[in-house]
Amino acid sequence: MEILSSRILVRPRDWEVSRRFYAETLGLAVAREFPGGVVFFLGTGYLELSRAGAVTIGDDALWLQVRSLPDAVAELRDRGVTPTREPRREFWGLDECWIADPDGRAIVLVEVPPGHPIRTDTRT
Image 1 (cartoon, rainbow, N blue to C red):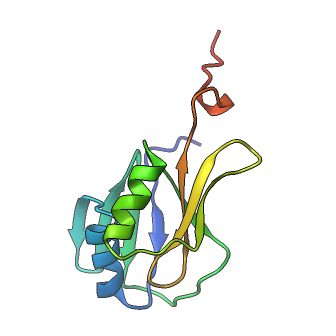
Image 2 (image 1 turned 120 degrees about the vertical axis):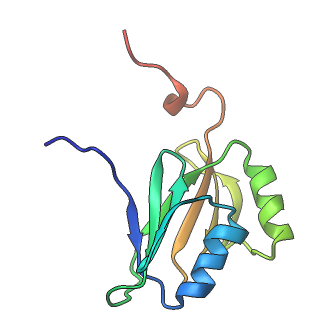
């Protein structure tokens, strides 16, 4: 199987509220819009907000790596976002802060600190 592209599909309860949150609060750029939704750039992937289908919020989460966790958290606080879990170094070595989208979906903001194995180039 060859994967050519991928995206996360989200069906929010209130489409307009969620669109504003992802576009304005998080500052995600629009990749494309279509009659049933909008697709945002999400680093090297995509996030699609869709108007179609039933809405169920489960245990899923968005994992978003940021360059500077303190800067990202300060910027979001200025925009009225209150973390659901304050920034901290997790036992697996990543600096994380959790927030939630308008539907309560977890968004994990992650900074990979210097020296962490994720930063290690294992190619020989």
